[in-house]
Length: 82
Image (cartoon, rainbow, N blue to C red; front, side):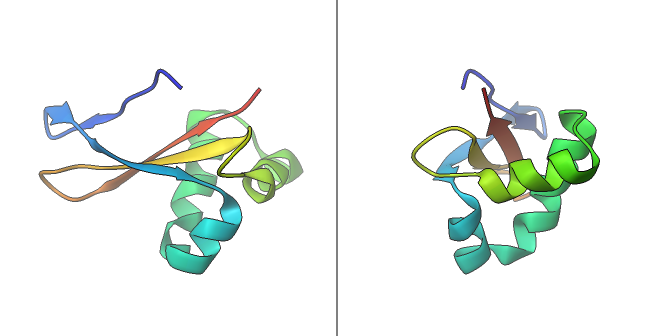
């Protein structure tokens, strides 16, 4: 996607792509973080934000990407959509 978040003055580790079903099955605690990214970082709100969240797929757009800071361990999200 060309976006690589940084944290604590260094690049984050890329943990992989995810779809919403993957996230809800294995990292459900991150769902709110993903929704916040969609709303605040991407500027998409209301029903459109929820629809984008629910449409995330690992293998085709829109796709979520999970990163994690190697220093403070904070998860970082990027969503790539066309």
